[in-house]
Length: 324
Image (cartoon, rainbow, N blue to C red; front, side, top):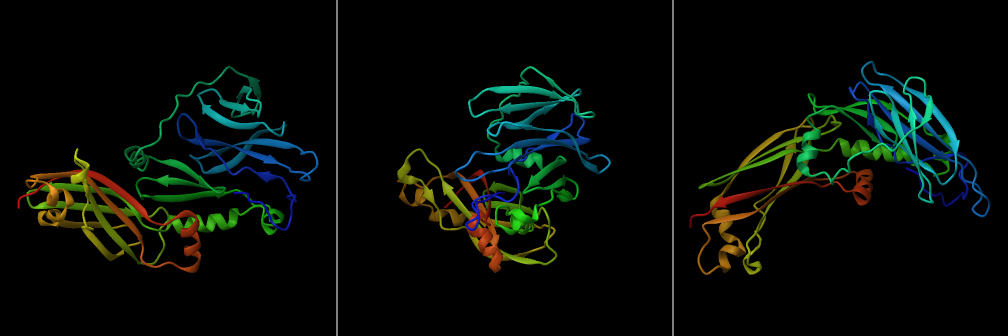
């Protein structure tokens, strides 16, 4: 992440773009990424040079990263690796004028050649089901120049390597990667939802929550767990939230925990939909929302929460039978 320094108007070294996309090889044995650097001149003078580098990391043997290619380019042109086939990497570059250039990059030798457009289907916005599915397969995550492998068996991140940070940029405040990495580790150490399941019956609602932490911290920590239910009906006058079904503080194992609890059917009788309707409803359809956040925060964590947030949430749609 790069930010402007109030003390210095010109960075003392080239700035690395913060957006780094990881592209896996066809057999998932390696991954590639591009790094873009720009050297900014005076605020009133001409902009200086820019360059792009392409790197590969051997995931199967934990070797690298290894730079395979790199070149200087127009300042306003940006690059991305669009895909990796059995034969080559396909690189797309886009200028501020809107013209696109496609190139083929040989992953072993780094030889460049002109290529036709590499067609990639547009990815829709990922829903929770797709995010959950991603936790069940190995994949590489990058944040602020730190790369880690997600292990679906151990259910945590395994560090791979970190990009070096220029000391002059860090000291002058232009590069905040070291601080951002520390904040990200704090976030990854907090419990999140691995799953939220709810089963309804005539007795009420049986809820099961599984938690995990991407990079577990060594100490047991207390969290505030809250469960809310919002009723949906076609008539807006009979829809609305219930009082919180559950609002408690609980100590969770840093490696993750499974929490089970029962919400009796009578808890739903206070719903506005039940109270306002001419006759009581026999069932409620609605959204069960669960939130989890640390019960207390350190001074550093207060800053992280202010800028990035700490509460984790998950919801599920259920139907609850009601008998008065």
